[in-house]
Image (cartoon, rainbow, N blue to C red; front, top):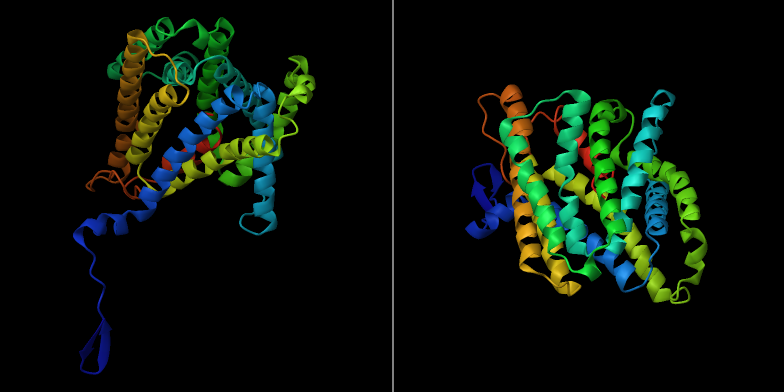
Length: 368
């Protein structure tokens, strides 16, 4: 619309319906959070479907496929000019190597557990990651947290114990349980280690380059592992190896690993820390309860109780960590400003101190 005024024409801003104003203001935040939840939940469920329905019971091989195909996609982005290739410097290769080994082992063991356990049980055990992170931070770095944070570890220990005791025999194996504990423990160690080196790595690489080199260096770790456990040789006996639909399905599952890293980066960029925290909790709960229906998992009262207690403990932990880290930094650097909005770019948080490490850390397959 145009308003005629003496000597000039003024363009009138279009009027938005009151219900549409939040969508206009926080459009990218809403889109990025929705994409993160859909991709994260979808990847977990489709990976389990690859094991249980497509009968591709080769978790280490599937982990390697995810890394390789993600790198093919990143390489195409570089060729088309959507991003620039940046290499890690020589002085950081040792640190990068340690991070690579921890990531490869964590991903492999967690995928092994997903193959052997019900998805609900595997995801509940995965929610114990904060326990290992806090233990490693306290023992290795001497970092002491608040009493509230230590107290919230109780439901994160009790809940999985109830979930295990409430699982039926067909949904539980000792090997799968031990694989998941090892995988989550390695993921916790990786989180702590990455926190010590992330400031050095983020200066020389963006998220895309970091993910490319991490996945590339993971492959030499996974190949000998797949050879030692026999997957590299028995994969040729897969009964659907001549079915192009099955292969297309595996390619989609593999690419979703890299897509998940991208949606995490997008969410951190366009949303606040509180939004990301809430999305993580919702994703965890949705993955667990949707799997009960999709895979027809028999659920006992003990299983339900353990899941609810674990999700509650995870939510409390995420809330306390948000309060401890993000709000503390927000007060130090932005004193006198409003707090971080639930939806929005988190402009009140000093990005160099908080958001940038989160971009790199979360995108580095931290919780994959």
